[in-house]
Amino acid sequence: MSLELKQHLKMTQQLVMTPQLQQAIKLLQLSRMELVDLIRTEINENPLLEETGEEEEGRAEAASPAEAKLETLEPEPKAAEKAEEVKGEEGANEIDWDQYLEHYQLQGHTAPSNRNLSDEELPGYEASLTRKGDLVDHLTWQLRLSKLAPEEETVAMLIIGNLDPDGYFKMPPVDGEPEEAATRDPLVRVAFEAGVGVEFAEGVLKKVQALDPVGVAARDLRECLLLQARHRNADIPEVVAIIERHLRHLESKNYAAIAKDLKISVEEVVRAVKIISAFEPKPGRAHSSEEAQYITPDVYIHKVGDRYVTVLNDDGLSKLRISGMYRAALRNGKAGAAKEYIQDKLRSAVWLIRSIHQRQRTIFKVTESIVKFQRDFLDKGIAHLKPLILRDVAEDIGMHESTVSRVTTNKYVHTPQGIYELKFFFNSAIARTGGDEIASEAVKNHIRQIVAGEEPKHPHSDQRIVEILRGQGIEIARRTVAKYREVLGILPSSKRKKYF
Image (cartoon, rainbow, N blue to C red; front, top):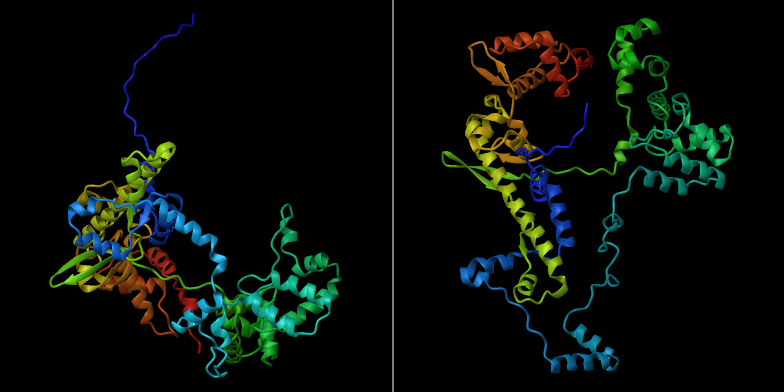
């Protein structure tokens, strides 16, 4: 057996992902907020990118095409003017500042002063806050008003610093620590870190738990509810017993089991549950620092007469252009040693602008195709949403399914029926009795309406919902109803039942 070397020629086709193509694909799947952040970052990093203002856009539209191509540069200052500037800088110390300030005030440029305003006219303290206070700030403020010893304050700050957003006292797990140790009482670790005894830390914890909101710094739900029961003088035997021993039955609304164990009537259990239901299981969420995130649509669909018009939303998106100064430097040969750097940044800027335009055009095409398929939804509402898959739109606009998938991710459209994500319009089909099909989102809407119209004391089971849908001509399995109900955030019938 001999070894030998040979050369072979072989022709193959291979798709190469260039950096420009990768950038275009990345821009397709970005949300509107992510695109705004990316544009802002590119403007800061690429000197050849400029943001066009509204006034400049108006002038560009009013100017002729020939004038729009011209780039005007500021003339270089003459030598005499430079000398005057240097001379002016050298004599800056000779300015009469008193006369200047007096003249400035006479021109009406005095800064607003609050010295002559009464207390009623001054803005409130809340109006001068720079940020919203969270739970830690609220508790720290109360702690400073309490007369605690330095050691107590140290332990109290450790407890407050280890509260989760819901207001519960939990210590984060330590690397390498066994799971059993991670679930133990967090007060032990706080006492160890502060160098105090567990009994001393327990006393400080009770003082922290006495702060507002009631129930804060509890180690579990049971302790949180007991703190609120004692604070509201509601620590009657039935309430305390239910909290201590029957939280699982309380969650499933198995009041009969609670009554049997406590040897009381179901009516007494219901009265105790009414008191417990007024408690706050998450005392910290009232002081949450999280703010609502508002959706800005990427595209609008307006009804004009009998047809629908698609309009891209460009508000908030910077209008980019290539810097005229750097283009003139390249054209006139004034770039010098920086020519290669400018050319590289120019290519990057041009590709970014083209990619953004391509992204907007693709969103427009996809939305136009969706309007074509979902005309009944736009006219009549969600009950008339049709089954639609990515392939239908991809074939309609002549693009690949993956491109349509990227475009419809995290993009929102404003329609006459409300604001929806573009993914919302793509649904699987559910069979009807008559042979036609209905979209899965329309079926979810039917389930939502059935649950909303049920009697609270006698809620519909999943099997009963199947029967109601069958009466409406929709054939669906019980497990599918259960899956859709969970997606909609609807509890099972046993947990939806109202006793009072």
